[in-house]
Structure formats: C-alpha cells, structure tokens
Length: 238
Image 1 (cartoon, rainbow, N blue to C red):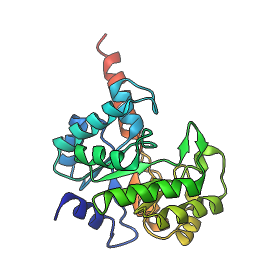
Image 2 (image 1 turned 135 degrees about the vertical axis):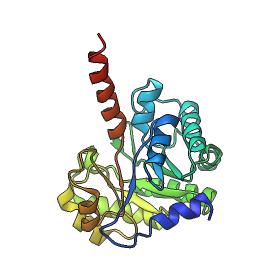
Image 3 (image 1 turned 90 degrees about the horizontal axis):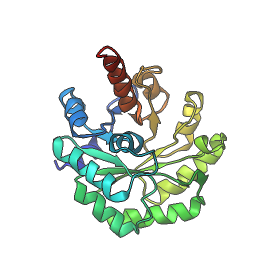
Image 4 (image 1 turned 30 degrees about the vertical axis):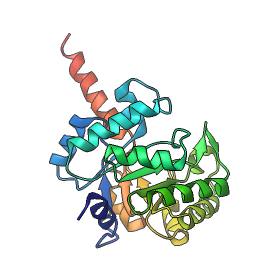
C-alpha cells in the first residue's frame, strides 16, 4: 500500500479501546526515534516545530514550516501528517501542492484565526476546496477550536464538526474538549475523532479510545518534555 492508503487504514481500528497513537516529532532526529519505538505513523505539532525553529507558535513562516515537515517526512518510512495551522493564507490548490511536495499524507487545519473562531460555513467551503484539490491523496483532520476559544458548549462543536465532515474532512479534532464530554461528541459526530493526549498517560490512550476517540495526538507535549529533560541535564553540567 502507499503511505496514504496505510494512513487511512490505520484509522480503521480493530477495537474502540485501541486508538491510533500519533506522537509528534519536531525534527528529523525525533522522528527517527519515534519510528524506531514502533509507532506506525507520526503527526507533527506546529508548536513543537515552531519551537525547534526558534519561533512562537503561530509565527513560523510557511516556507520554513513546509521545509521542516519535508525533512521529517524524508527521515522516516512511516506516514507523516503535518499540523499546518490555518493554511498560511494559501489558496487551497497551492496549499495542497506544497504539502504533498513535503511527502506528508495528512494535515491538521484550524478553524480560528488570530484567536477568533472563523465562520463555520465559510470554513467548511474552504475545506471542501482543499478536499477537491487533494482528491484522496491527503487525510484532512479538521480542527474544531470552540473549546479553546471560549465556547465550551459541546453542541456548537458538533455543529461545526458536521459541516466539516460534510465538506470532506476525514477526521475532526475538538481540541481542548474535556474528557467527560467525549462520549457526547462521539454520539453526535460521524467519522473519526482526534483527541489530545498527555505525555503522562493520564488519561491513557486506551481510556480515551473507550470513550470514543479514534486517534490520539499530543501537540507539543513531547518536545516540551524533551526540553525539560535537556534543561535538567544542562543544570548538572555547570
């Protein structure tokens, strides 16, 4: 199978208690470590990559982000999905072309700009254009930002998710959703759901899977934990 076919197949989990765990590399070296650990696919975090490149999250120039994703994708044999924030203002066709050039087979796309939720129907129309441009060559993970933008109502998240799935999104990501609303989200959302996990494993991926998550990502958690470990090592070198 091609990498995109493999990636799609990985989302068809044999058991709800066995979600797809996608750790987030921030550079080629960390990607190789995660591949060697046995993970079948990886998902880059925009904040982690930004930190590695010396930028604040949301401030990475598009060229540098795509170049970083390309280095990561080249470094491993497993499929790589990339967090490309809100698409960097690129037209759908150009966005898809540049992403495919990196070797990535999937992407995260946010539905807020400068901390403000976008109009969900306008965003759904844009996602539909991305889907059309990509065909079946990209796995589109549509982020639903209501919980992190001060709108904690699960119903609003479900409404947005329905529009994005109808527009062709392969998965939805209600980032920041409390664990206790996951069963409600699962009952109202068609298709795979991405949930944010913690590097401490609490709740565990198995627990999140049992509540309805199809896949688990960790944002910049691994990069930040690695930075803390380096800080501790550095403190003993003086």
